[in-house]
Image 1 (tube, rainbow, N blue to C red):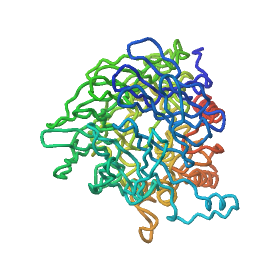
Image 2: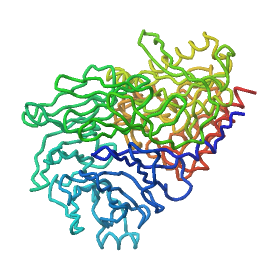
Image 3: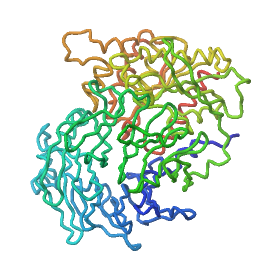
Image 4: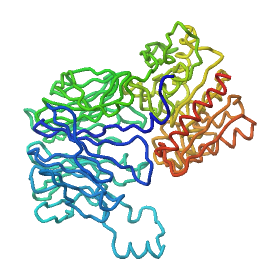
Length: 630
């Protein structure tokens, strides 16, 4: 026995959002359970002395705690907590061992930023409900008129001396998504959208400067879609402001770092033609740091006036980067092939030292050997992926039943990290005797803009043959048994699994989790409609059909399906609505295809509740056991 159980996977805890104190002496992070057992996800704040051993819990209440932020002098920690009213977060202050609430905003606080002025904190919060709002809710006279009284995060200011929250008359009522103060205590850079609607808002971004002393503002103009990760830096010509956003003109695109020279207003793409994809931009007092998805791994670089200067390379992922103002010490979440992510700290050039150990219960568990794969697509494009062998086996013991797990997005990637999650994951299947292939086909992250953009309007085309080429390679090497192949995926990976069974009978079983089966319907009803339309190639209002999206929608090929399919979907999924799964279920039922359709109440695009996660793990393994290991 390997000792790995479904309970061991879902009952773990994971560190999130590390925040280094400016003096580099302490770090605060959130410790969050991997599954939820009640109405709320109870999280904890932990403090770690960088040069000491172990950590200590910073707070004792049962609450959802998040977004730790340090004061400039490192003596005070601000964070969000809903300890007073569950589900409604307020800013709290931890100083000298005592925790106090410093806001009581009835709508709750969305985000906060301690300013250079030690007596003030910038806030993002929606408007408080009026007496009329409260009365209408009680009377159920609460019809929603789309576009009217739309909830929007507004910029507000907390005075810590008086506790007063004021709302300056700036930004014309736009929805505020991010703030960053200039390192010298100057103006705030503010990213806004015209709407909080995730389909429309990210395409309407604008960048502003707001003076927190006078509340005067300056508009820097529109920004590229899905802009985030603001950072200031100085050079000889003055101040610059950068952010990460999608590369124009299409919405299915690789990300880039954009640089706005404040004096001249000239904007440049600083990572054009780079065969990597920036994921985070982090401000220091000088040149900012850039995290770059680099194939299966991650590169950390500095953005100098001459371009990117690589500082260190890290196996697998590197996420949630935090840095001291001087930029001499960083912390981030990273792991290894056989260890889950933990907080690591060190200089930007490395090496990084692990300072948390949040999952000791996994020590000693036997898992499958994992190795990177490098191969070429049918058209010669360089590709990568991972192979995880059955636990305790070597490749020479093959061929094995092989399950291919396709990542979501498609603008995500498999990284060379421990592949053990609540959803169908390589190590969960490897401990049951399966080999698992984790491909990174085109359309994903880690190989630059053109690699990502190549699937726009062409989903299921070259990315599909990229996956098949990898499977054929593993069959030829004697790792995979061609008569015992399965395929699985969630979200866009679920689309690929649904697409696969309509294109070939090679697979003996498939898992479609929160998968896309009709791109036109997704563009019409999904929360990211226009982004999905960029993938599908058209919308239902593109004139009289047939439409391009019909040719790349799995439901169009339902009559060809012969493979048994397990369909899993959250009842409250707004990203890929439940109707997608219902549509596929009805099509498969119509054509008499063996399948099982499971709906998880209360769940969205990701399954959160403990019993549901356990069901996903057990049901998935039982499904593949039934068809691949009779």
